[in-house]
Length: 398
Image 1 (cartoon, rainbow, N blue to C red):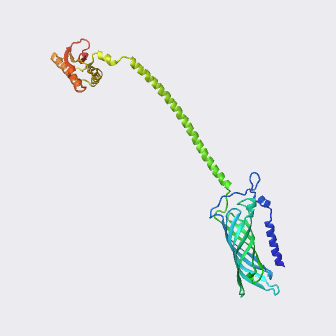
Image 2 (cartoon, rainbow, N blue to C red):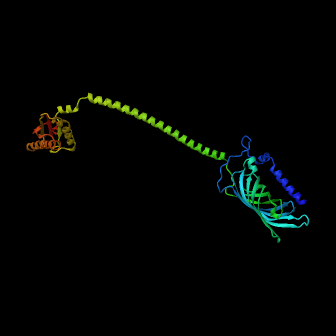
Image 3 (cartoon, rainbow, N blue to C red):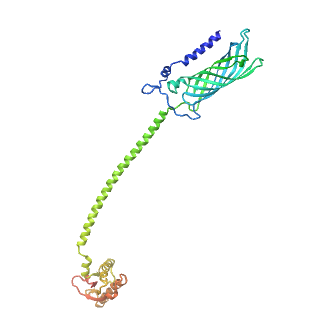
């Protein structure tokens, strides 16, 4: 009777825990939004390697069948599982060691070894009702299980049996660290009475305590949090693009101003070019004026070749005057070399005047292509009292 009262008390504790109000979990959680509503997701899908756990525990079990009295026996658990969402998970486990029953008449205990390989469907009621909170100390997890139950006799009892079993349980996860939990597992398993070579239904109740270690990333991320971070990143990118667009607008405005200034300068230059063109059209042709003059190049005293400056003068004369006279009209060009009578002998001056004329004649014919039929070569000795250097020259007349 004492053992029956112990089992009844344990089941009552399970019932109280399962009927605990959601408000109590929410109050412990404190997981509420700005309006005071409990936050329940949605959550980002986790990777395959995240949110796994592995655990081991030890405790006691009691085996009940209508033809026997119950007895307490040791029990061990080992399991591995994964949470797919903060509320839904699955677990595969092993439970076993020993089960006992007592014969009513003799009081003798019958010992059986057993192994129960099971799969569990887990529902984290705390997260489902109160919203996910990774730092919550106590998570209440009811679950359903089913699996393969093997029982065999001990103490020279020749007996064995294999059955399918189902049941339910209540898991208490008490958070110790970020990756370590204290596990209290209350489980009830129902199978055929043949497990102990009896009839009817057999029920195995167990309570174990142990540790579970979280593997991979043990936490979940709310989708809204992910979206918020992505939205923030997108907003930052938009801000950068808007700043770049504004900078381009400023640069474009500056370019438009520069283009307008260049257009104004071009207009001003066009007006100046027009004025210069009009002025050139209204001014007399200097070549005609020079054509009416007698061009002359000067020599240094005693020299019959021109200096570089005077060669430039001769080039100008050839390009602007003689070439104009050689446009098809019959023009006679006299090339007269002169020398001053104030210096040198008459013989020397005669030689210089002739040499100077012949020198200019040859340049006009050979370098500037003047038709020799249009040229007349002459020489003279000139006497000047004031500027004898002007008499050391070649005059080109038409």
